[in-house]
Length: 462
Image 1: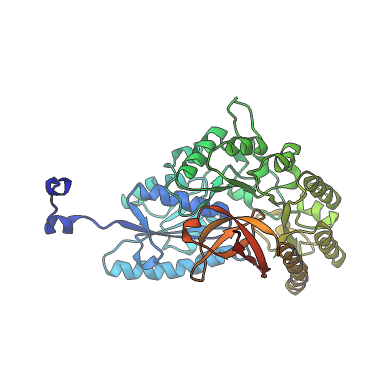
Image 2: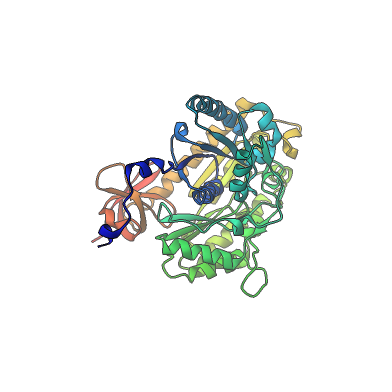
């Protein structure tokens, strides 16, 4: 009946329906940028945009940038060169293309981006992306080369639309932004601002919406996530442990993770949460950066190697099976061979499940960039290779301990091979197994049969 009585759309009317606007978003860097890109896409969806993976189809192209890695800004300018060609070709066909540089490079470089790349229409800092629809309207109204990098007074999260249906069974949730630590190598306080924590009620509401739409695992994000101090239900500041307990009460949420932490904010109640809260996964990323106290002091880390080792000892006493990962910088200004060997020794003593190692690279405006004793590039490369060999051996050793064991695996998606699914163990390892596609989103016991360089493989029990 409805089909018979519904208004019919004729050919002329169908032809007059405008095609949806398309947005291309390229995300660089950390998980927080992934989250930010998702939120920008959601804000734009309310304006009629749909995502495309092809820049040549895009009415709007966004580069959501990261300023942590070496030569980050140069990679952005290289991409802008390619987008300039796309914009020119589309203009020849009468199509408009707006180009936006967002994220931390945008915050750090501001108007310099427009000067070097006049093709850019909008420069947008990470604290202002909730204003994207308004700024695009101003561009279409005739304004040009907009630069929005001030830290606004309003809460950007409250100005954003509700989260849309997620694309996966795992989702990120930004709970904290910015950092007050001022490590001498880091740009975060300058690009993301001081520490800000979202209220518990807002985070619980967002997490519930995600779970209602099929999310089983949530990773809490923050530049200094364990420094979380958002307003709780009683109006008082709540710690990250308190937030985790509130989230764990959500029916249907099966797993909770968080990243990235600072040793100085690893509080006793958070350590105990790892022992007490079943939904909090036994995996912790806790950067130490260097194993020599002299280097740690120059980095302004405000902890010593011995204090770090004592801390992870207390964490393991609370949760003996916890898997620890870390970040390490080699070749920091003034690092000697003895300093580097102290870092290697700490890695071996700490017995990390995994670690991420990086050559030091100077960031303009940070204190370390002008320090004496800059380490030559060949020395940094050689030290990084030696350290990475130790890390890789530890990772393979850690994975090897699971062969013959049974792990609960949250299956996330189809694998590369037909009939295969890929999921995550509680310890964040990738696990492959032959499984029914209907098991995506389910936690299933898998007997581990083999361990590769970067993943485990097994068979479903029973």
